Length: 489
Ligand SMILES: [Zn+2]
Image 1 (cartoon, rainbow, N blue to C red):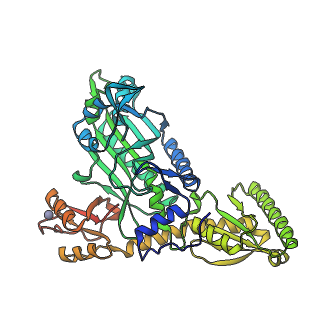
Image 2 (image 1 turned 135 degrees about the vertical axis):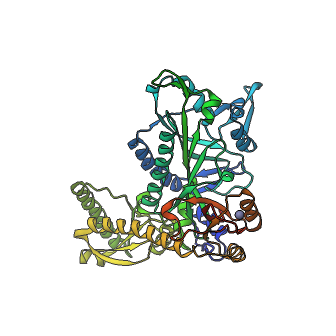
Image 3 (image 1 turned 90 degrees about the vertical axis):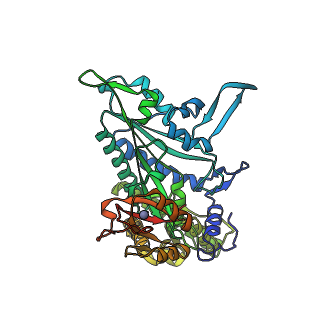
């Protein structure tokens, strides 16, 4: 598997480090088609765990899964003016089928608002049919020019939630609720802290009334938009004629929301946590939590150690049944590979705990556990191994979130800053800069042109600075909002 060549370091070249890590940890690979990605089992195992947890969270909040086709009549995209403007440049279009030119070209879905709301129009008649709370797990295609594994690819996997409500208030509540679920997931499961807030008009989803996002800081101090939730207002309802009869008997348009997260989150997880040795996966998302590396020199030792390792695994299974716990353990009993080479490989793959066990450990009734996040090594009694592993996994999960949040705060600027100083920060190491904004799109565009930084969001109250900025970062006139500025992926 992985060769012994060292990864480029983050300090040397963050971008090369990321690409090499994805390939060497066997998370994904390039496909024969430019910009497409093959997700390998190590990467897909993380996605599956993400999917499983999010799916539970969606269902707990009343959503049901459905599936809509990936081919959409091209004319559908044109029904909502802003939507087509936003998505037309990046659509892939099918013009032929079965050797014949199609009467109407079909678009490979870049997102499914149009097809889904055309169906809602058929299914929703009365206020009794509302709310409709649906989600689909699917692939989408966006013809991107510059692509990066997991971060931006022509085809990617995601979920898209689509709902219809009787009132604007309910739609807004749903939009915020799902943003909150994304935040809970990203912090609780990915150990990736996020800033939530509203997007400015220039960054809003094409066709939405309001867009909210989760913004995470990567280790190069750039922001990654990790999830979005949109209040679509009645724009799509009008375009697709989704109407319902209210209690008074009059016809009204429904209010829609849509929200999504994608395999991009895996890129976020990598760039939040990994180090120069390779990946570090938060335990809750790790397909393997503990890897056991048996240590021996002779054949006789090998037989003895392997026998003990399997006994330890059986004891752990018995403990799991008593404790209603479930540990994902893998025994690396491959022959002909030295323990050091195995350590290297499992560190590259980011497995949270490594258990080392040799003849002397067995005699002492002990095993060595090594944490991937800190590298700290300790000796533990075989009698309490289950509890100790479980405690260690929870500590790792928690500590990874704390470490990521500390790093973000250390690289955030909340003090009043001049535009020149801001430019210097963005030309240098970068940062999350909280500063005033006058509300003008011109200031926003100029800053982007001069520094490549954009308003990631207008942060929700809990993330705003204690003393609100009073003037615009660019033009110095009165600020209407505090904005979070950063360069982004
Ligand atoms: Zn301004």
